[in-house]
Image: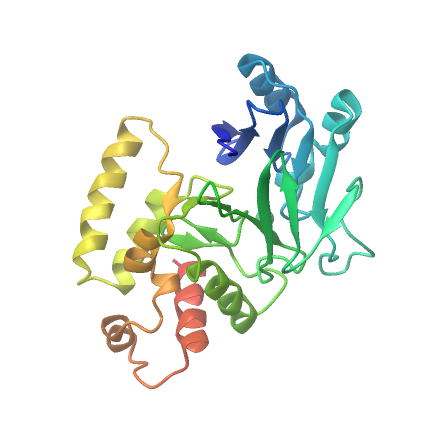
Length: 260
Ligand SMILES: [Zn+2]
């Protein structure tokens, strides 16, 4: 059995990077490559040698360290096969491109690839079913979702639906610590949600103690994250969108967050 170890640490101002290590094979993957110095130092501190990079999307705060990490470690870079908007091809430096429905093996664990376009067109997420964990990049955040830069609301909603369908016990590792501001917004569109009220208090306390709020859990997101809840009658009523389609309600919530 796999038994992978996960080590999450902050990079740049509010990004997270996670190292995934197999004590069995000695392999170590980093999810995204915001900054080479920080990531290589984290691997060194753990006594792990980077063998893989898993890239979610082309934004600089997920790829800036790619070339240097690859050069220093000789690691294999796995990333989306899709180009971002206005790009000629996949992220430069990717050795193995992957797309929706693909699976590959890291150490002895299966990794399933989900294409979740919207924030960017190239976005892929990595699901580790045996470890019950998903790496969502900037698609799904704890209590929030990424801004829709390259796709449209319908596309983003369909991407979020893929993540919402994962087993509820799945740990949600996302690219940023945005949870507190997400929670403060969430309560404005879903003010009567008791689970959300509790979560807002819990998150505020965690951040005061300087603790991360990531990873979250898919099951909790289904109960508290308004971007996964456009079908909820209370939210629809609050927005005056009782008969709208789910993606239309989602798009309205995203618009309100953009203007918050
Ligand atoms: Zn991004």
